[in-house]
Amino acid sequence: RRWGKLMIRILFVPGLAIFIAACTANQEASEGDIAEPASSEISNSEGSTAPPPTESTDTAFAMSMPEAVRGMWREDDLGRAPTAEDCNQTSTSNRNFGKVLTVRADGYSLFETGGRIIEVHNRTDTMIDATFDTTYADTPTRARKDVALQPDGTLAVNDDDGDGIMSVTQYRRCPGQ
Image 1 (cartoon, rainbow, N blue to C red):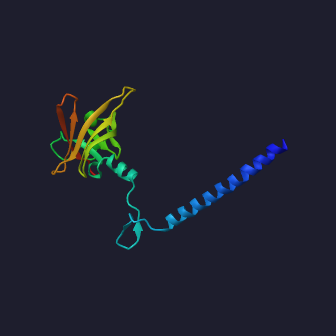
Image 2 (cartoon, helix red, strand yellow):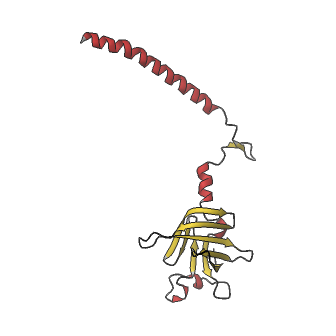
């Protein structure tokens, strides 16, 4: 039994010393790397440096609705710009049900339906062509939509019905949006 304890000490202690030395050398090398500025850092106008955008930031941007199309929009069936009452979704009148589109960073809602972005096919600052998870009442569904801000300020939403036929709905921005 003594012989076993002696062998453990003979083999374990030198191995532990080597392990600690290796860890210390690795830590010193890491600290040296941190102290040096990365060559990929970008200088701003004040002369300080900031790290470049991370992939997760780029991915979040690419997987979001363009800022220009976010907000509340009313279906353009009035023949005029919508009023605040036209955009009121809690109105007792049924004239607004299913007519007010809300576009968020992660998707859209339209009355009791809506969708979250699950795949982006094309995106610019004023349009997005994406597939949305439109699951409703535990029935998994998807919808491909093209949402684009038009030069006249209207929002065109093209819905692909799956047969290659697109239906287009025009919206006008609600007041205060």
